[in-house]
Length: 232
Image (cartoon, rainbow, N blue to C red):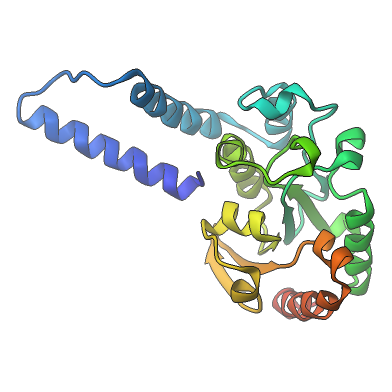
Protein backbone atom coordinates (compact mmCIF):
# COMPACT_ATOMS: atom_id res chain seq x y z
CA UNK A 1 0.00 0.00 0.00
CA UNK A 2 1.44 3.37 -0.96
CA UNK A 3 1.30 6.54 1.10
CA UNK A 4 -1.66 8.06 -0.74
CA UNK A 5 -3.76 4.90 -0.30
CA UNK A 6 -2.83 4.69 3.38
CA UNK A 7 -3.73 8.33 4.00
CA UNK A 8 -7.05 7.83 2.21
CA UNK A 9 -7.93 4.78 4.31
CA UNK A 10 -7.02 6.58 7.55
CA UNK A 11 -9.20 9.52 6.49
CA UNK A 12 -12.12 7.17 5.76
CA UNK A 13 -11.62 5.42 9.11
CA UNK A 14 -11.77 8.75 10.96
CA UNK A 15 -14.89 9.78 9.06
CA UNK A 16 -16.62 6.48 9.84
CA UNK A 17 -15.69 6.78 13.52
CA UNK A 18 -17.04 10.34 13.66
CA UNK A 19 -20.28 9.22 12.03
CA UNK A 20 -20.76 6.39 14.54
CA UNK A 21 -20.18 8.76 17.45
CA UNK A 22 -22.69 11.23 16.01
CA UNK A 23 -25.44 8.63 16.23
CA UNK A 24 -24.49 7.58 19.74
CA UNK A 25 -22.32 4.54 19.06
CA UNK A 26 -19.16 4.68 21.15
CA UNK A 27 -18.00 1.09 20.78
CA UNK A 28 -18.05 -1.59 18.11
CA UNK A 29 -17.05 -5.25 18.00
CA UNK A 30 -14.82 -6.22 15.10
CA UNK A 31 -13.07 -9.48 14.23
CA UNK A 32 -9.42 -9.88 15.18
CA UNK A 33 -8.20 -9.90 11.57
CA UNK A 34 -9.94 -6.61 10.85
CA UNK A 35 -8.72 -5.11 14.13
CA UNK A 36 -5.13 -6.09 13.33
CA UNK A 37 -5.47 -4.55 9.87
CA UNK A 38 -6.60 -1.24 11.38
CA UNK A 39 -3.81 -1.28 13.97
CA UNK A 40 -1.19 -2.02 11.31
CA UNK A 41 -2.56 0.82 9.19
CA UNK A 42 -2.25 3.31 12.04
CA UNK A 43 1.12 1.97 13.21
CA UNK A 44 2.54 2.16 9.70
CA UNK A 45 1.57 5.81 9.44
CA UNK A 46 3.00 6.56 12.89
CA UNK A 47 6.25 4.73 12.03
CA UNK A 48 6.63 6.55 8.72
CA UNK A 49 5.99 9.94 10.31
CA UNK A 50 8.54 9.21 13.05
CA UNK A 51 11.52 8.84 10.69
CA UNK A 52 13.79 11.88 10.93
CA UNK A 53 16.23 10.96 8.16
CA UNK A 54 17.33 8.21 5.79
CA UNK A 55 19.71 6.70 8.34
CA UNK A 56 16.79 6.01 10.66
CA UNK A 57 14.94 4.27 7.84
CA UNK A 58 18.04 2.22 7.02
CA UNK A 59 18.34 1.06 10.64
CA UNK A 60 14.63 0.18 10.71
CA UNK A 61 15.08 -1.87 7.54
CA UNK A 62 18.08 -3.72 9.01
CA UNK A 63 15.98 -4.71 12.02
CA UNK A 64 12.79 -5.38 10.08
CA UNK A 65 10.89 -8.64 10.51
CA UNK A 66 7.57 -7.44 9.11
CA UNK A 67 7.30 -10.16 6.47
CA UNK A 68 8.75 -13.67 5.94
CA UNK A 69 11.51 -12.42 3.63
CA UNK A 70 13.68 -11.56 6.63
CA UNK A 71 14.07 -15.24 7.53
CA UNK A 72 16.40 -16.14 4.63
CA UNK A 73 18.20 -12.89 3.93
CA UNK A 74 21.94 -12.47 4.35
CA UNK A 75 21.71 -8.70 4.21
CA UNK A 76 19.04 -6.09 3.80
CA UNK A 77 19.49 -4.01 0.65
CA UNK A 78 18.70 -0.34 1.18
CA UNK A 79 20.22 1.90 -1.48
CA UNK A 80 23.29 3.16 -3.28
CA UNK A 81 24.08 6.50 -4.84
CA UNK A 82 23.37 10.00 -3.58
CA UNK A 83 20.43 11.07 -1.41
CA UNK A 84 20.81 14.54 -2.98
CA UNK A 85 19.99 13.28 -6.46
CA UNK A 86 17.25 14.54 -8.77
CA UNK A 87 16.90 11.05 -10.27
CA UNK A 88 15.73 7.93 -8.42
CA UNK A 89 15.78 4.43 -9.93
CA UNK A 90 13.48 1.88 -8.28
CA UNK A 91 13.75 -1.83 -9.08
CA UNK A 92 11.91 -4.91 -7.89
CA UNK A 93 14.05 -6.52 -5.21
CA UNK A 94 17.52 -7.86 -4.41
CA UNK A 95 18.96 -10.87 -6.19
CA UNK A 96 21.67 -13.24 -4.98
CA UNK A 97 24.54 -10.81 -5.60
CA UNK A 98 22.68 -7.95 -3.94
CA UNK A 99 21.76 -10.09 -0.94
CA UNK A 100 25.42 -10.94 -0.43
CA UNK A 101 26.70 -7.39 -0.97
CA UNK A 102 23.92 -5.51 0.80
CA UNK A 103 23.68 -3.11 -2.17
CA UNK A 104 21.13 -2.88 -5.01
CA UNK A 105 22.00 -3.59 -8.64
CA UNK A 106 25.49 -5.03 -8.32
CA UNK A 107 24.97 -8.22 -10.36
CA UNK A 108 24.69 -8.57 -14.14
CA UNK A 109 21.57 -6.39 -14.27
CA UNK A 110 23.39 -3.80 -12.18
CA UNK A 111 26.35 -3.80 -14.52
CA UNK A 112 23.97 -3.09 -17.39
CA UNK A 113 22.33 -0.30 -15.39
CA UNK A 114 25.79 1.19 -14.84
CA UNK A 115 26.31 1.25 -18.62
CA UNK A 116 22.96 3.00 -19.06
CA UNK A 117 24.03 5.61 -16.51
CA UNK A 118 27.33 6.09 -18.35
CA UNK A 119 25.46 6.64 -21.60
CA UNK A 120 23.25 9.18 -19.83
CA UNK A 121 26.39 10.86 -18.41
CA UNK A 122 25.02 10.36 -14.92
CA UNK A 123 27.67 9.26 -12.38
CA UNK A 124 26.46 7.00 -9.57
CA UNK A 125 26.89 9.97 -7.23
CA UNK A 126 24.18 11.77 -9.21
CA UNK A 127 21.46 9.13 -8.84
CA UNK A 128 19.72 7.25 -6.04
CA UNK A 129 19.00 3.54 -6.54
CA UNK A 130 16.75 1.33 -4.43
CA UNK A 131 14.12 -1.40 -4.68
CA UNK A 132 10.47 -1.97 -3.88
CA UNK A 133 11.42 -4.64 -1.31
CA UNK A 134 14.59 -4.62 0.76
CA UNK A 135 15.12 -8.39 1.22
CA UNK A 136 15.67 -11.03 -1.43
CA UNK A 137 12.62 -13.13 -2.35
CA UNK A 138 13.47 -16.85 -2.55
CA UNK A 139 14.71 -17.93 -5.99
CA UNK A 140 14.37 -14.29 -7.07
CA UNK A 141 10.61 -14.72 -7.44
CA UNK A 142 8.33 -11.69 -7.71
CA UNK A 143 7.52 -10.29 -4.25
CA UNK A 144 3.96 -10.84 -3.06
CA UNK A 145 1.48 -8.04 -2.40
CA UNK A 146 1.95 -8.44 1.37
CA UNK A 147 5.73 -8.26 1.02
CA UNK A 148 5.48 -5.12 -1.10
CA UNK A 149 3.03 -3.62 1.37
CA UNK A 150 5.28 -4.43 4.33
CA UNK A 151 8.14 -2.49 2.73
CA UNK A 152 6.09 0.36 1.31
CA UNK A 153 6.49 2.77 4.23
CA UNK A 154 10.28 2.43 4.00
CA UNK A 155 10.15 3.26 0.29
CA UNK A 156 7.80 6.19 0.84
CA UNK A 157 10.23 7.48 3.44
CA UNK A 158 13.10 7.23 0.96
CA UNK A 159 11.12 9.17 -1.63
CA UNK A 160 10.11 11.85 0.88
CA UNK A 161 13.70 12.48 2.02
CA UNK A 162 15.43 12.24 -1.36
CA UNK A 163 12.77 14.39 -3.07
CA UNK A 164 13.68 13.31 -6.63
CA UNK A 165 12.49 15.27 -9.63
CA UNK A 166 12.25 12.07 -11.67
CA UNK A 167 11.49 8.51 -10.52
CA UNK A 168 12.31 5.70 -12.96
CA UNK A 169 10.39 2.49 -12.30
CA UNK A 170 12.44 -0.44 -13.56
CA UNK A 171 9.97 -3.17 -14.39
CA UNK A 172 6.33 -4.01 -13.74
CA UNK A 173 6.72 -4.65 -10.00
CA UNK A 174 8.19 -1.19 -9.45
CA UNK A 175 5.40 0.34 -11.52
CA UNK A 176 2.81 -1.54 -9.47
CA UNK A 177 4.37 -0.44 -6.19
CA UNK A 178 4.70 3.22 -7.19
CA UNK A 179 1.74 3.81 -9.48
CA UNK A 180 -0.58 1.11 -8.14
CA UNK A 181 -1.19 -0.31 -11.60
CA UNK A 182 -0.85 -3.75 -13.15
CA UNK A 183 -0.79 -2.46 -16.70
CA UNK A 184 1.85 -3.86 -19.01
CA UNK A 185 5.11 -1.96 -19.36
CA UNK A 186 4.58 -1.49 -23.07
CA UNK A 187 1.38 0.40 -22.25
CA UNK A 188 3.02 2.53 -19.54
CA UNK A 189 6.40 3.46 -20.99
CA UNK A 190 7.21 6.51 -23.08
CA UNK A 191 5.35 9.02 -20.91
CA UNK A 192 5.48 10.69 -17.52
CA UNK A 193 3.09 10.34 -14.60
CA UNK A 194 2.81 12.94 -11.83
CA UNK A 195 3.02 11.60 -8.28
CA UNK A 196 4.99 12.29 -5.07
CA UNK A 197 5.90 15.73 -6.48
CA UNK A 198 7.95 13.96 -9.13
CA UNK A 199 7.76 12.94 -12.76
CA UNK A 200 7.49 9.15 -12.89
CA UNK A 201 8.44 7.07 -15.91
CA UNK A 202 8.21 3.31 -16.38
CA UNK A 203 10.67 1.27 -18.42
CA UNK A 204 12.00 -2.27 -18.65
CA UNK A 205 14.15 -3.73 -15.89
CA UNK A 206 17.80 -4.30 -16.91
CA UNK A 207 17.28 -8.03 -16.27
CA UNK A 208 14.64 -8.01 -19.01
CA UNK A 209 17.21 -6.50 -21.37
CA UNK A 210 19.59 -9.38 -20.63
CA UNK A 211 16.85 -11.77 -21.71
CA UNK A 212 15.76 -9.71 -24.71
CA UNK A 213 18.43 -7.24 -25.96
CA UNK A 214 15.99 -5.84 -28.55
CA UNK A 215 14.35 -3.88 -25.73
CA UNK A 216 17.51 -1.84 -25.12
CA UNK A 217 16.40 0.59 -27.83
CA UNK A 218 13.09 1.17 -26.01
CA UNK A 219 14.82 1.79 -22.68
CA UNK A 220 17.19 4.25 -24.32
CA UNK A 221 14.21 6.14 -25.75
CA UNK A 222 12.80 6.39 -22.21
CA UNK A 223 16.13 7.54 -20.80
CA UNK A 224 16.31 10.29 -23.43
CA UNK A 225 12.98 11.57 -22.09
CA UNK A 226 14.51 11.59 -18.62
CA UNK A 227 17.61 13.46 -19.80
CA UNK A 228 15.47 16.13 -21.44
CA UNK A 229 13.39 16.44 -18.25
CA UNK A 230 16.44 17.06 -16.06
CA UNK A 231 18.24 19.16 -18.67
CA UNK A 232 21.04 16.64 -19.19
